[in-house]
Image (cartoon, rainbow, N blue to C red):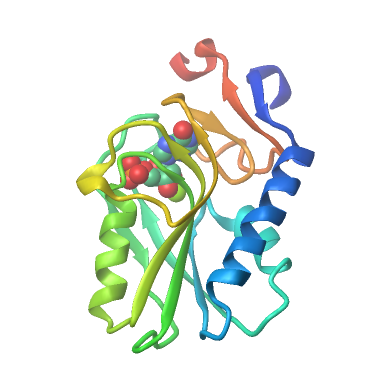
Length: 179
Ligand code: IMP
Ligand code: MG
């Protein structure tokens, strides 16, 4: 089972819930009087954006973009786009939502793609920001928590496509990562 693979819970469900409330409040203030198109980066951002949008009582559009960079392990490989946007983002304020900002390679590429589609503004919101040097100094405009550069799972984050459904964010036992 899942639970026995967990080393340490970093953020439990209640802590995440309270922080998502705060991030939602920040987003509401930042987009007051502006249009808002939210873009979920599949698949890891699904629980986060699902919770986030239900705390945003205002008009917004929701779309998804597909990106896969981790090929079944804990080290990044080349990024592939697996799904393009369906909505027209020309002249729109776009908020890209992802699970985690690690090297930043994924979000840098996605930001460029959305900018090239004519978006008026592209901002980034991540649940987690790893305390590592990010590519080209990319930073999240909104973030949930900053974490040391450990590999984490849960609340959308996977290891070999498992653990996304855990309601908390945790580190995995080394024996699981090495198996
Ligand atoms: P980046 O391109 O290096 O910033 O990596 C971003 C992507 O890598 C995220 O969208 C995640 O899918 C994945 N990733 C990075 N760190 C972790 C982690 O600690 N656990 C699970 N997935 C991760
Ligand atoms: Mg991801």
